[in-house]
Amino acid sequence: MRIVLLGPPGAGKGTQAQIIAGELGVPAISTGDIFRANVSGQTELGLEAKVYMDAGDLVPDEITVAMVKDRLAEPDAKAGFLLDGFPRTIAQAEQLRGSLDELGHHLDRVVELVVEEEELVRRLSGRRMLVGGEWVQRDDDRPETVRHRLEVYREQTAPLSGFYDGEGLLSRIDAIGTVEEVTARVLTALGQPGRSDHS
Image (cartoon, rainbow, N blue to C red):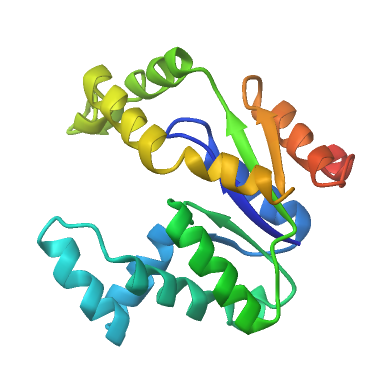
């Protein structure tokens, strides 16, 4: 199966991506991992991306899409994949479709994890990390920063929901509940109910 996982910050995408990819036996591919692999491997695309990242700028779509395409062409992704964190815009979604066409593939499903904004703010601003023996809040998890991140998501990424819905690929999943409950809902939407029962 070839799946895209959508959802705002704090919806639990990273957690669900790993579990669901494991259930389906496909790699979970995040753009963060792809960027790190290209930068640390000093690939041509990685060196190009690093210039933008070091300047604090967004990496242009053509570099991001080229990296994703290279990753999707690797042997472990031939039988399927789960994309987490990409595409982020409709332009990227269109480029992804073109890249998959060139590889002779298509998306099977787009799963959107849906959580109310107040719950997202509560989840994210409640996160703490251990620094020097003290639990502290990350700067990007302060309530005002969280609301800004959600605003950016609404403007840039939320339109993907309508784009994929129009293509008949979208399943919206209620992402409130235990990790296991959300996983079960996603697997049911993917036509794989009961897959997680043995875990």
